[in-house]
Image: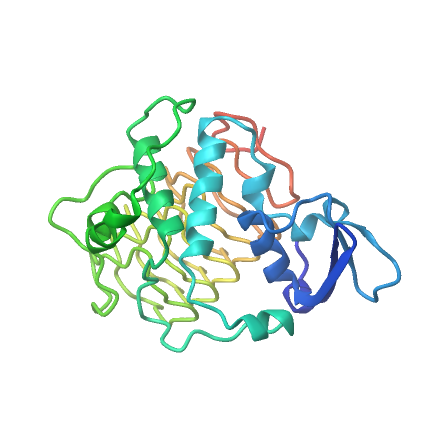
Length: 301
């Protein structure tokens, strides 16, 4: 279970004898998702006492705890895609363990690299249920520019893999029913009382956002970042929160009728008093860090 304030802790890393850092906890988790660190690499607070990253569950992203099956691989791919899309970070800041704030939080996390394009191709293949054993076709460098120009179309393959015809993400759009903020930065945004019914919020950054009493009936929040978000009294009936990051979110008084929280990360989130009847919890990472059994409904089996 994650603890309050752990994201502010600084860690030195040791990989193949090379010591780096210090880095904040969130950056360690990001590096694990991107493969720059492994759970077998070591961390230390003081460069004297070292232990493997695997000995610190608060540093392990939920996606790495999922089984090596089709859905687990899809969740890890989306997590890597999400981290690849974050705003470019100054390398000097990373070396000093500083994570700069986004300059414009409401901008869309625009893809830039050829690696990003390759991730998009892989995700599209997965969403179309192509054989996982078949290697993805490489993207020729000469076509990279064309792929970037057309990436808006691929962005419409959201949480459950379905396409939203005639709808493109618009990060500048005002909050309202059916708004499409997929892959947008809305960190810390004040959205209390807003009606976002049917909104498309796949992979949207809503970390520490305030959604007190908001209406999100039927919204798609697949793989959204809702860490430490204030969701008190929110109506999430029929909403999809597949793979959503919800560590330490506040959900007192929330409605979750028929919501899908499969593969969501609920570590450190208090669920007392909530009616979970009919809520899908297949492979959900529970509040105490255990992974719910497949096909769990209403309770973490």
